[in-house]
Image (cartoon, each protein chain N blue to C red):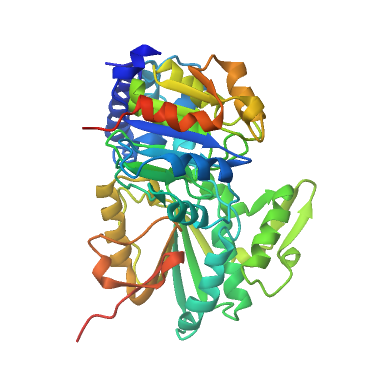
Length: 196
Length: 277
């Protein structure tokens, strides 16, 4: 893992489902407002949800949290949540894209869609995290991140509120880190140190 | 060059070739979604790379059609985003009722679900016989499907729920007949809809519309193409007419923005201003 310490990361992607709200409240609450890279998140929410979760997390956390808009420029120090009923993707030019393509793993937004498109754009500069959740969405995407030489982190299934999403990812691949949720902020801050 | 960058190059070359040979212009489509769709098509095509497929794609129209199916088909549902249709019913229909005849352009209608939804809504609002919906899509195959108005029966439960949430005043089951595993929409709904092929990237405008719907179509377009299409809509729309976009699309910071007023901002419904005297 030492080789990671001098690597320059460009983005962090997180996939989470059941149990996601409390996990995100904790994790994002621990990130500083000037966290040096952008954070892109897919959580499985019902198709008719509004931007309530982004508004809530933005109030609770010091880092800025918002719902992703189409063709929005991706900036550091900002957390983008995929909107309900849209897939979230990353364009090479550093902007966000939305799509209403068919469900993937019964989900829209789907973690795999975000992870695969982010891996293609950021390559080794990407950190991918799978947290608590039911189902298997995100496993293929995390494998793609690994194949593109990004860093992969999975929540220890024993620590997760729902273990199947982390379990499924670990069945498909060996992750760089398998950790408890409360250890995650420290690892992220170590991988992505504050810029001088 | 990484493997993914090489794929991007292959996509660029193929899109240029398809434009030159067939006139379909995907060069201004947003890359992330296009890449995903092409990768999916490729995995079922039997070709190892897009470069290998390209030679045949440029010569074989049937193969091209299968590719077009893969990259242009949008999914839809009846009364998608019920609160949008509710806003149309409550905030737009009262204006439409003041016209003797209403012309609607539904751009990017896919398999027609939303066009039929609009026809149902307008009928229920007492506008039967007073409107025509021009429903267009780039993809001829989906237009044929839309024309049939036949959908899988298992979708009806979901569509019914959407219909009810959108403020539907009747019983949704009155609008279709169930046969085997399919629901056939009532032919009377089709009487006021004209389905036609139209390519937003290269074709011209439709005149004198009172309402234009183009929801979740332009999210796949890059800025210049988006501007072109909004220009088409602006030319086609009467003053006082309405423009409806998808819930995550907005008219902010566009060339035509100044000429429009958001009347239901969260629903992305805009009204074209009357020219100042």
